[in-house]
Length: 355
Ligand code: ADP
Ligand code: GN1
Ligand code: MG
Picture 1 (cartoon, helix red, strand yellow):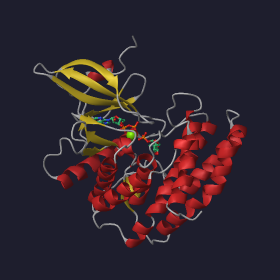
Picture 2 (tube, helix red, strand yellow):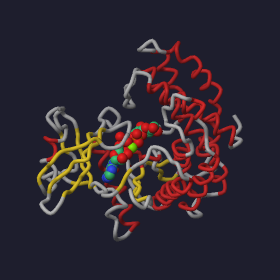
Picture 3 (cartoon, protein in one colour):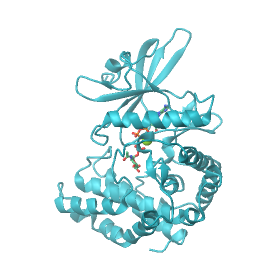
Picture 4 (tube, helix red, strand yellow):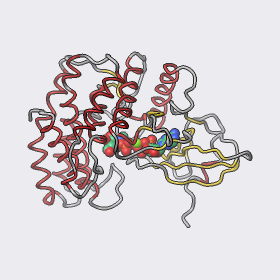
């Protein structure tokens, strides 16, 4: 049996009870996350232990500064009863929000939201509606908050910069993979005009810059395991100024397609119009009138853009030798890139986005 990675960490955080063990949690691509269980006599209690990806988030203190600012603002906005609706960071026994282990890794701990689950794919339009309404509501709540947030990953949704990075990765070609990605490379060239309209609208002030989640994929939400209602928006590490359109785009990318993000049968990779319609309605309902006409008009563009951009990022990482996104096999980033590029084209076609 493998040693428990959380064993040495569990005693460092201020959690009552006898530590029982941990199990891996979720399918995020960045951090490593576990559910830690404690015996508390009358029953059991769970927390989340997360080993921060230090390569991606190079300043863990700033990461926690942002997270606490965002969760404080959300708690203030929700009022009472936020136990299952706002992420709660737990402190170490010495009152810190991070623990640094002997290997130099940073750990954080959250209250485990009991009776919750995350999903990687949506089946029912009702779940698509609820998910999008939750992210729409999230951006509305933060729109008026005065948050001094550090830009943890500069240019996170700067699609042109992502394209430049792709060119650089191809030029370095550290694993000799460039030749094998010729079809994907051509797709990127075809879809590249998608990167202009939304960023232009932002730069020219036709749409406002607002606080956004910036990583609104479907598994960054917790659903009630029984009732299926959305409980909580999680993974708050990329909350920064942006536009809620980035979030709508990520929702369409991850919740309008019935296939997996790295599906190998490309025939299955397409936007389901019924799920898309539910996402659109849900997002507008959650944001309840806070979006301008111009923002609403750009929703289809955002859906194609974010899907394209994510494809570009997966392809870059494939060429870079899989240094950013966690992979389970050697070609996973290539499979992910293929799917996202195909889906971006399909979204653009179905939503009549001009390329
Ligand atoms: P990553 O940045 O790697 O995606 P996340 O913060 O999204 O990390 O966490 C990974 C997964 O862990 C989530 O998709 C979810 O399944 C689970 N998770 C995270 N926080 C909690 C929590 N407080 N309660 C229950 N499950 C959680
Ligand atoms: C990552 O952390 P996770 O798995 O929720 C990534 C997103 C990508 C997504 C692709 C900080 O999200 O930007 O869109 O993978 N997060 C970061 O699935 O880069
Ligand atoms: Mg996540």
